[in-house]
Image (cartoon, rainbow, N blue to C red; front, side, top):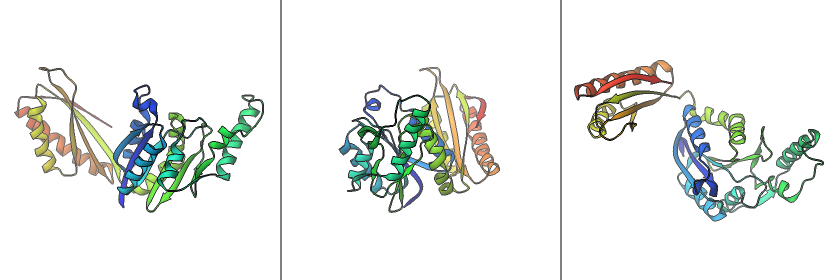
Length: 274
């Protein structure tokens, strides 16, 4: 079991054809990282049961503590994530009574608000309450389709909707507490500086040297300028149990790298911190 590790699997043809920007992966990766979780992989697959099942199986073989899927939990024909999860686990989908009650309560609320005429649990609506055997539903504070969670050996396999507001709401209510518990006291800290007038090829060995001298700091360069006019963001990050330790680590690495950059003809702009 790889403690504090997570993989994200995003489902949807719209992601693969470029129709929809994958903001869910971006949001979830940043949020999980802030909770002390190490996101090891982000995978995107289409609305295909076999592709989803294969992605789940491959992720389970790597034994991360968390696997989280987004997308494909709705009532339409192309919402196939739960079916793919069931296939990966050699399981079957079955109507989960808790999930069905969650769906029913949502439509009752819609009827009371005048958004629909009557509450009718049609086949597409019941579909949202069909979960893999022994999975537990996760309440959806915003939308209709519940999320789902199932323990597979030591891995938490979690399915969330693709609608960003729904994904974020379920994540904060039901998933973040699990990640926070796993991350323990570890928190993620980051800072950036900007370097001008130094090529990335010159900068690379300087970063390698500072990372060697500061094993708790991770440093990555992000070119922002144009050819012949280098402008590079240098991002520093670390995971620590308290802010003072993190700031000391990052501060030391920033000072050392800044000095090397200036010795090599570069110029440093003020750092930005978060």
